[in-house]
Structures are given as structure tokens and as C-alpha cells.
Amino acid sequence: MQNRDIRRTLILLLALGVFLQPISSPVWAQEEDDGIEIEENDGKGGDPSGKGKYDAEETRRKNSGLAGGGPQDDGDAHAPKVKLSLQQQINKAIKDGVEWLKKRQGKDGSWGPVRANRRYGESKASGNYIRDELGPTAWSVYTLSKCGVPAKDPVVRKGLKFISDQTRYVFDEMGGKAAKRDDLGKDGLGQQRVAQSSPRALTTYESAAIILMIEAAYQRSEKLTKKHKVRKWKTKMLLSPPKKSKIPKKAWGAMHDRIMWLTYGRKIRPKAGGGTTTINGTLNVKGPNNGGWRYGQANGDADLSATQFVLLAFRAASQAGYPMERLMRNGQTVWERTAKYVMNCQNQDGGFRYQTQPGKTTGSMTACGIASLVICKEQIELVNAERGKKEPQIEMPSGIAESIERGKKWLDLNFTVKQNPGGSHHYYYLYGVERVGDLTARKEFNSMDWYVRGARLLIPAQAGDGSWTDQGAYPPRDVLGSCYALLFLKRATPPVVTTTER
Image 1 (tube, rainbow, N blue to C red):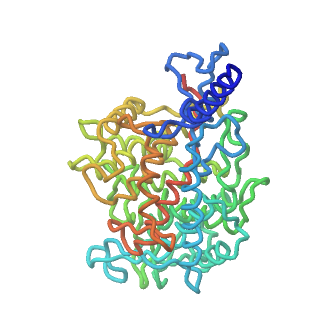
Image 2: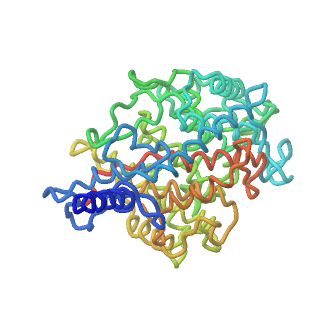
Image 3: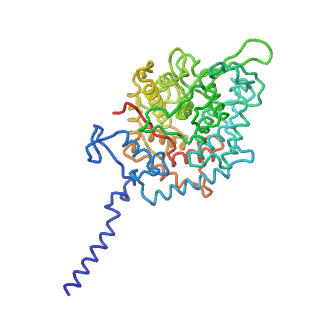
């Protein structure tokens, strides 16, 4: 009788242990938690593992890619995990979204037009729309590449060909066509004359998307790591990629052309006689908008949204080996000028507005502002580390670190995944949060895990065919909504590697 009671007690204890194990296990979080086990530190150099040494860069690496095939979790046994059930939902949502995006491609290889603010074919000061056909196509190829679809995939190849066919020449935002690239000089830094004879234009958003697309499709976002706090390689001749680069020379040339237009601009030769008109790149812009970008560069206007897209593109080019620091005017690089422009868009509350002119703070613009400054700071530190004592150091813009912290504090107070605080464009805002979260290695905003909360919002919002529609986006809303959702879920932004972090 006693033995039977002992056996019953043991069986009951074992069953209770099995039942309690998922709750007490350090691998899976409790149901009411966000679902992530994260490695934290006290910010004072303490060791979260108790092994006597804390490495900030190693902790950043482990914490930066938490789920959905993020940038740093592949093959890392120590990377934090989300709940298995949520991870499976994320993986399925990404898979279905990628399949839908592939099927959405048109017969010509494109993904359809977006319309923004000015009518193509009319004078630059009139009209309502500007043609932007290449933006959704480049953005779709970029998204597919970030989701692991290789460049040899038929859909990606067709999209790349469409972009290539449409950009055989350099275009400016007024519809001018470049005759040859010879005017750029042997290293690619010269000014180029163009004639107004092209049937279409190329905008700032298109140009940035094309740069991002080329780097992601061919280079697969070569990441800076702890092993090399400088670039593995960089080109000496701007018109040609580094010897070890995976980017084809023609694709590199297309990327270079876009960088030239965005920085130095173009000189337009009228159809019949007269002088030339300069389409200003940001290095030519005068006044408070110097360092910023707008949809086009003709009038020297700028906004924070276009600016952060260009910075993302320039960062990708830098990762691929393009020496962006060589592009300067009056001794200042793009990174210095743009950081100053972005800080001029910050409000007193720490958040950011759309332009330097007075305006309200929004969540999406605050995300743009933080990410933009983090990129500028990272790139200046990178170049200075490469130069060492041999060359003059780039001066870090005064107050940039404090500006970043003020922006993050605003986001801490106002973060939500349910809407864009103070604005619209919901999915665009979520993609902005992903950039900030991964660039700054932040797990939480407003005491909420931004990734898990965002994933839990996006998964049920996915349509049965695998798409997401962002009602606040420009058409095609299904394409851009799906791209933003996939880039969020996939955690597409490679984390920052700094050289001076403490």
C-alpha cells in the first residue's frame, strides 16, 4: 500500500513538473509576456552572463536579430528566441507575403506606378502628379532580396532587367537624358550635361530604391562585424566596384549614377541655345535645406522622409565598398551636412517634424530622424577609424548624440503599434520603427517589445492571398503595404557597428 502511494505521488509530481516546465523554462516566455528572452546589461559595463567580462558589441550582435530571420540570428545558438508558436506564424506570413509579391509582378517585370506630388511633362511648378514607375519595382526587388530570394530567381532577374532597361541613361527629375557617362571624368566625380529629350524622369525615391535594390540583390547586405570595424574593401575608382565585389560593373555604374545625381546633381542643356540649368544635388543646395533631399532636386527644397531613404541607400552603397566620404564640398562630407539638416528638423519635445519649417511631431518622422542621425554618426566613425592618424578626421557634428537620445526618449513616451503617433501612413511608420529598433539595438519602446507587438498586429492584418494593403500609402497600396510589412517582419535593417560605443 505504501509503495503504491509513493508511486502515485511520484507520478503526480512528474506530471506537475511537465505541466509547469513551459512556464518556468528560460527559453519560452510566459503567455502574458512579449515572448522574448533578451540578454540585458546595466549600461555600466556589467556582465549579463556573469563571466566577468561584458562586450557591448557582442551583446548588440546577439540582441539585434530576434525573429523572422533577422540580420544576426542565423546559425547563432545564443540569439534570443520568440515563442515557437509566434515564430511559426511569422515564418508563414513572410513565406506567403513573398509568394504574393512574386505573383504580383507584371509581364514587363514591373510592379506598377506610384503617384506623388507633381505632374510629369509639365513645368516643374505646376500640375498634381509626378511619374514614379520605378519606385515600386525597385522596392519590391529590394524586399524580395531582403527576404532571401536570390538574384538568379526569375522574378528578381526580370525586375532587375526592367530597371536596367529603363535606366540605360542617367535621368534627371525634369526628364533629361544623359548622352554618355564620359563627362563624369575618369573617377566619376565630374558634372554631366544632359539634353531634355527623354520620355520619363527619375525621382529621389526611385534613385534611393535602385541603390538599395542593387546592393541587396547582389551583395546581400554585406555587414560590418566585430572582426572588421572598417570596410572589408572599397573601390578606388568610383565607376568600378571593388575587385571582390559581387555587384556587376553595369549595375555598379547604375548605382554610381544615382549617387552622383543625388549629391552633385546635373547640368541641363536646353533644347535650343541658351545657357545651362543646374539640377541641384544636396551638395549644391544653399540655406537651411543643405544636406537634405526632396522628391526632386530642382528647387533646393527638402524633407526628412526623402532624406532618410537616401541615407539608407548611401549606407548600403558604403557597405558595398563605395567611398561616400569622397563626395564632399567645401571640405564637408554628405554625412556631416545631412546630420545638421536632420537636427534642424527636431522639435523642442525631442521628436521630429517633416521639414525644417515649423510642424508637428509624428512617430514616422521621429523614426526617420533617429535612424538618419544614427547612420550619419556610424559612417563618420567608420571613416575616422579607417583613416586613423594618417588622414584628417571628419568632425562629428555637435550635439548629434544628444539629438539621438532626445528622439529615443520621445519614442519611449509615445510608441504604439496601433497607429502612427500624430500622423498617418501606418505601415510606413512600422517600417521606420524597425529601422530604429535594429539600428540602435533597442528591444523596447514605451516598455513594449516593438517587434513582437508589431508582428502580432501585422500577422492578422495579412489578407488571405498573402498581401497587406496600407490604406495610407500611395498606389499601389498593396505592393507598398506588403513591402513595408515584410521588411518589418524580416528585420531587414543590418544593425549598426560603432567604433566608439561604451
